[in-house]
Image 1 (tube, rainbow, N blue to C red):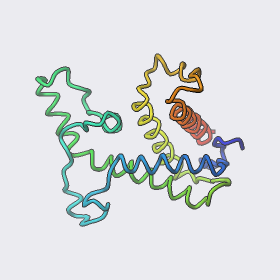
Image 2 (image 1 turned 120 degrees about the vertical axis):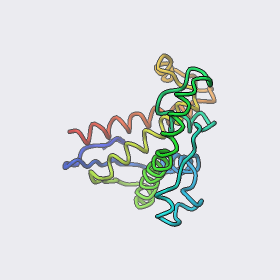
Image 3 (image 1 turned 45 degrees about the vertical axis):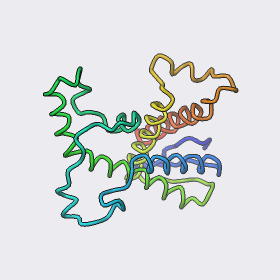
Length: 191
């Protein structure tokens, strides 16, 4: 195993991580948790009945990375005057964003807990039930880094050719590594 996921059968996957890889991945997931924010009531807990009827925001997040993670359901309105699209997106967001945030938060927490259980370095084995959560968490990280790096489909290939002195290089390396992890996990669970 060379730092990428491999199939362990029954839809599960395993990956060998050294301490640096595990630490980087954990740190990125903790940052993702901070970006997504706390759950209802600020602590993720509270009254489950009240949470069932809680309404979310009606406007897209101002942070471009959050806007990418929680996009408008009906695309970005052509203009703010496109009242119908603005209202429809707002209504959809009000009833879905809190659940989507909770799922993304739970996925990131699952990754952090699995890495904590690894104890630094070793082989991490994921049962099939956890693999999709990991795929979601890796995808969220990659989308966020892509927004922060302003990556477009046209310039993604150029990321492999950045000079060593480019200040974006560490984040670009993390972005590319996350893509490789995501691809290898997808291949491992579909074998």
